Image 1 (cartoon, rainbow, N blue to C red):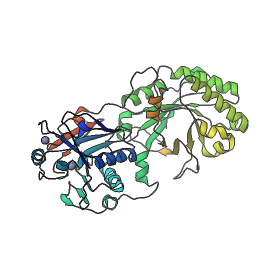
Image 2 (cartoon, rainbow, N blue to C red):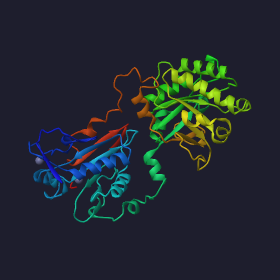
Image 3 (cartoon, rainbow, N blue to C red):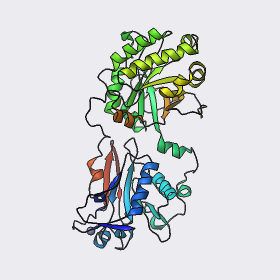
Image 4 (cartoon, rainbow, N blue to C red):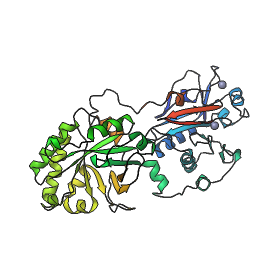
Length: 411
Ligand SMILES: [Zn+2]
Ligand SMILES: [Zn+2]
């Protein structure tokens, strides 16, 4: 059903969409038409893509406005059935229109089109007539019956594409990685970094590159967590390590958990009960100080040397090198390689995949140094991405130093 709202109405139509976002951009104060089904489906899209936000560059258009941006004056935007959107992921970057098109197809939008050659913007509508799937960078007619096939994206559970949609790619580094060019790392698509803060129970054992890595990763816009390499063999030593670690973390903010890194054979040889007690001791100290505590272990010793309560109690980061993590319960992060190559880092680097949106949860819960902040929200979009002009002919936006430009019209 198409609803009509007065020009100045600012009703919240759904958790993420306000009627003002659909307002015609012709400049005249006329009513706004919005199909209820359009809003419903946009919400599903928001959730399926795990968006941080969806920006509408065009919603309802009167005939005059539709013609002025190159349309026929009678299209789906004129009926209130359509929206041109840019979907942003949890990392603040636009999600490829290829993925948006496929997901919109799954949801059952009647009309879908990629509208820029950079695959940033997507047209979606809830037309009731024949399905129309287009790609305006090719032409404006129907180009496909199946976007998965058209874009060469495989469908099904746990496909690589789906993982790309729902997960974050990261690295973990220490002094052994040398001097890192964090801007290059960012440009290479790395979305987070876990930094070694130090090791053992003496303050002088702070990682010599920790301060530099923290400062430069943050400056490049890369969210960070930290890990503490443990040499503890007793609960008392684990507590001492936590105290030294806390001193070093002080005054900083971490978007990812702080991990207790347990991998010394000397520790394992003390047995399962003692290893579990050390983990509880270290993580408990961190939690008492307002940190989200986590555990880093290789998959095999993790299965051998931790008691059941540990497995779901802390943020879990498991290492197992290869194409698969052989652990069937839920895990927050997987270290899949120690021989990754990433631009900006010389030599090998550890590669990780995160399955939990830690940055959002950390900030929401006010942990890891975020408790003193009043309002914590994702980085603001560049102003041009939110401007009221994108439906005019040329669009240029800049996201994290990367420029996107293209034409928006017709759809
Ligand atoms: Zn208008
Ligand atoms: Zn459109």
